[in-house]
Length: 154
Image (cartoon, rainbow, N blue to C red; front, side, top):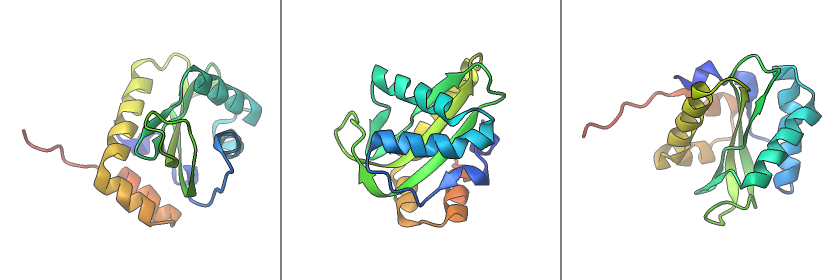
């Protein structure tokens, strides 16, 4: 599964300056709503509900908030590079500055898991994460996110 299958140029943001986790999720919900044809409140409520189960901050300054929706047509991603890291109650207690929100149709099953795994592998690559942190240009961020890497030989 290629990242470009569920991430569009319109779904990359580099200029959000949220004061905290809740504001970030609200801002992202507002930006995602027209892209997925869902009300921003529906998206926000689902993301907050998922965060109540446990933080989606996976460590090293990375968070992957995600939720499923009955009325969503396809897997959809939204990437945000924050200028200033925020507390996200991450597993390692480090503030977050790279956020990839993943929305999935309720029946997505394996595709949802494949999407989460793809995003986690991509963002956990230290070289790629460093490059993402060094640029604020949306097109450059989109290109960096979509670059396919060759698996390392064992």
